[in-house]
Image (cartoon, rainbow, N blue to C red; front, side, top):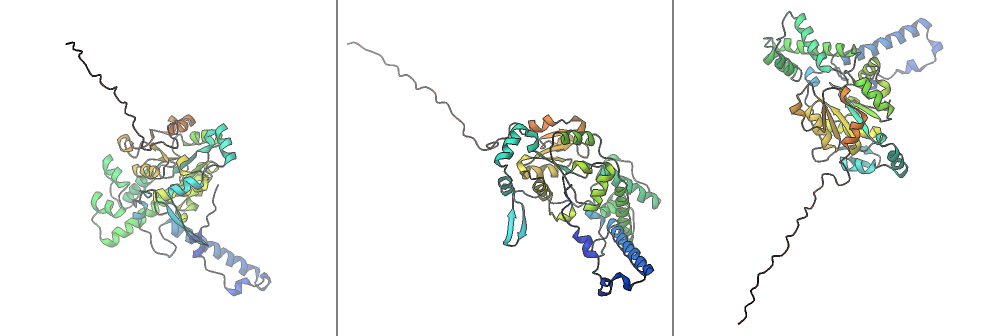
Length: 361
């Protein structure tokens, strides 16, 4: 698994050791050393809990609205993102990646014999790998139980609750008349309940593991993208038994500003050009971001109805409907000139024959 990006946020929270701690161990009693190390572990554990319960690296509270924040799609005009090198900034856009990640001569020969290995699969974590909708609904019901209130049973209302901000849900949907301080407390408590449920998640979406087994047999690399932190993602994958299937992970630590940027970063980590990648999404915005990156999009019907996902190249109800041959069919009509403007050949009609009348005088 590609976990190359360092957790700079977590490391920045830890203060440097004072000069006295850099002395030899012989100058400290053993009990003092043990208590110091134990206290250091407690501090780290406390920081992890603070992050999980809704606090960022500066100690300020993270509002639960960030759990539902509608991110920018990105790459609307093929644009990408900038990275900085010693010789200056480097702009990485869609066309640049498609050109630089072009297969070499030996790779083209290998992919000609094994075409499936040329693809790269990118999975969104939310509602594609794990059912995070159920976790959010459970968190709302737990909060209502603690406050001795009720959640409406209306299915459409509950669907809106999964995507609206916590303050909007409390004021407009649940209509809990609370003071501003109470709304902030309830929002933070909801965030904490959601992360606690996430840390106990141990089952992937139905049919995903069998699909990943088939993909792994075909030696197709896979990447996972999410707005969550890397530590939570790795732990969740380990509990679900999916860690061995993903060769790359794009998380909050990668600093991507839009959905498309995450997809492009995943393509770079998989060493596959974007035009050879397939994105698995359940949101129409994710489908649009994939197409902006010249990627194919497979949509899962569930969170959104099928008519909202008609822009996807393929829409399925579950992973059980997929096979590796579906990936080949996605690229069957895609060539170097696919979707380019073509000249229409207009057949010229034969010239009309002129009628002549021979007159003999």
